Amino acid sequence: MEHYIESDHPHIAAFMDIGTNSVRLLVVRVEAKQAYRILTDQKETVRLGESEFIDQRLQPKAMQRAVLICANFANMARSHGADEIVAVATAAVREAENKNAFLRRLQQATGLDVHVVSGMEEARLIYLGVSSGVHLGAKTALFIDIGGGSTEIIVGSQQQHHFLGSLKLGAIRVSSLFLPDPSAPVSPDLYAFLLRNVRIGSVRIIQQVQKYRIDLAIGSSGTIQNLADIAARMFYKRKRDRDDVLALGQLKQVAKVLCELPLDKRRQVPGINPERADIIIGGAAVLQTLMQDLQISEIAISERGLRDGLLMEYLSRRQPDYWHTSVRQRSVMQLGRTCGFDEVHAQNVAALALELFDSARDAGLHRLGAAERELLHHAALLHDVGAFLSYNRHHVHSYYIISNAEMLGFDQTETAIIAATTLFHRKGLAGRKRPEFAALEKRSQKIVRTLSVLLRMAENLNRGHTNVVRHATLHTVDDKKMTLRVHAAGDCQVEIWGVESHQAAFEKELGRIMTIDLVTDPS
Image (tube, rainbow, N blue to C red; front, side, top):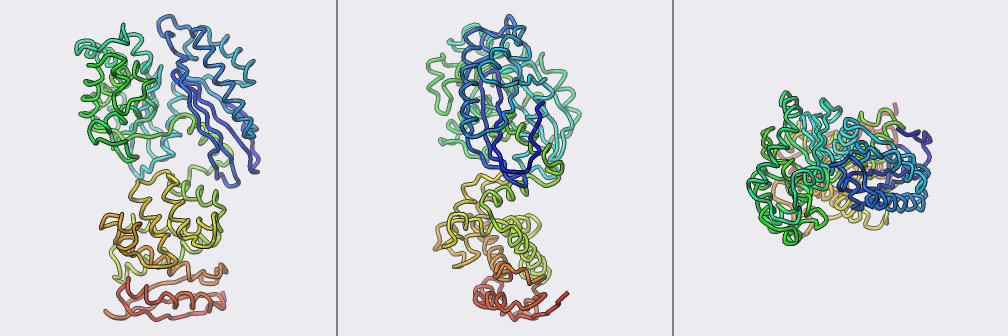
């Protein structure tokens, strides 16, 4: 691949994916400790593989379009200060008989040394990009990425892939080979012909994938995203939400509607990307065949892909233990470091909050479990990120930042709980008069009430950012009283005052009158 910069100093890096249908650019500022901030994320449709798959040659006009877009993207990356541009090309280039001529033109126009990746390497990079943005836990996932010239299929867990496969079946390839007139409607017989040919081309990989236990399926790439966009409009009468899935039954109905329309009418279907209207039926046939034959009833949608995989590969080469933390933990620390949070204070507050959570559960003060404990941990780490904007009302700013950060690995409900927990860690109680709280469903409201009071207690126990309080636990005295036992390494009067100033709030939420037992332990 590429020689990656080893310095841990902040710098700008860019990643370019030259695909069969589109060229994508991702430019990031890489900070210390592997935090990064996206400076720009661009995509242009170039149709590099247009008319290629019949004679295996890139066409002159397609090459010209691609060179122009790549040159513009390279200039854009350099204008952002990129000191390195990692560029790869996929199916259209790797199969073209005239690829060397194209790569020479590209190098002359852009100065880029483009690496042509194999189908297996493309699958591996897609896996890195998509799996790094989803929380799998102990589940095994099937990843499907339908490009213009190929479809990559991966089976993997959170930490490693178990199977990599690449099919010479993509939206452009299938459409150009099996749809003689892209402007005409597609008859049921012709669509069935597409399905049969896709099945023939994918049968061996399907047989291999069937050996694995699959807990869920995740689809990436513009084709799958756009099919899900159309389905959301068709079945829910709205834009697609981040947590929406595409059901096989919905996909079949979407494909039927698209097939019945000529190209000009197809471009007007709600939710469709008009630039994909001529190739989306071919892509739908690929996805439908894979879902049917692998008995996948629904597929989640990821906005991530190969270019994100290039970034993950880059970061892991600079820090070998990068993958040892979960995607959620990486995402939380990424946001905190981007906002310049006090990491020592955040870690101390998180440790105290978890001690309070565990001891309160053991004391019967709440019945929350491991999932809620994890959310408290993340909220504690991020409770002060709003100070990045202004310390005044920083809890409000924290809520806004977390709500809009699109943290990887979290669904919308989990993000809302984390954000609301940080909102109520400082002033005011979680109540129905607050619109941020009222917007939560009933169970989430109950969780936020408990987590926010524990976070408030933990934050006050490190009020002076001195980390003098080493441990804090809650203990039930009787059905009316509880004790907060504080172990400190020195004078912690500021912290005790902080807790006492919110004592009424703690007692209201935890249902006990609280006394404080201070144990000074200089060691």
